[in-house]
Image (cartoon, rainbow, N blue to C red; front, side, top):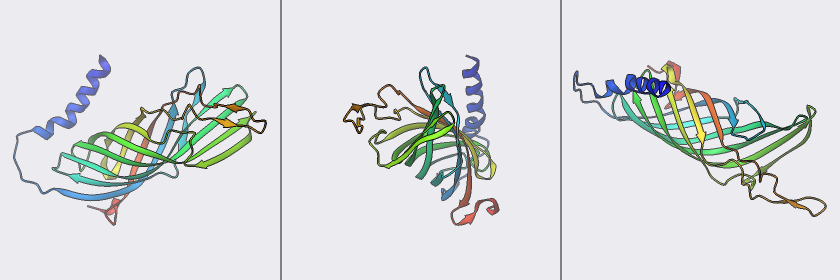
Length: 226
């Protein structure tokens, strides 16, 4: 209940001014693009396996089209390229690292002082382009491969996001993928003709916290934009 109360207070801080009746002013709708990067700290929901936080600062590109209907309410969409994955210990001596490059289309809303601090939340549909998996045994890499448009992962990934926008195009975001990372029905056949399902027992949902920063607004350098 304390967490819920704190969340409601924070939301009230940002949302309440949007409905204040101090002065009604007609404002022109603003449409602009913003682009920049994202530093991701991700993990996964794994049962009975040691999970390690993964840091992926590259290559994450965000390209958004912003529609600010008023100074305190707007929405956005765009096209993003994102490096997201997780790390886990399969056994005390074996560590696995998996990631995908996703092409994503977000749809979200913004509420608060859009020129300073505000809340945003929304949904994003992502399509995995490239899957990479690494295996380390006793801290030495013993296997590595990557596959374009791999059947090892789900063909589409769905996620929800919530975050806080800060001055000069920076923001903090939390994201949760409610679709599973792996295609648990994926089958592979080894050199001996034995067929297996390597991800059958891996029920993984990715989540992450990220620091986001916009470098450009329209065609201007963001930090010089007044």
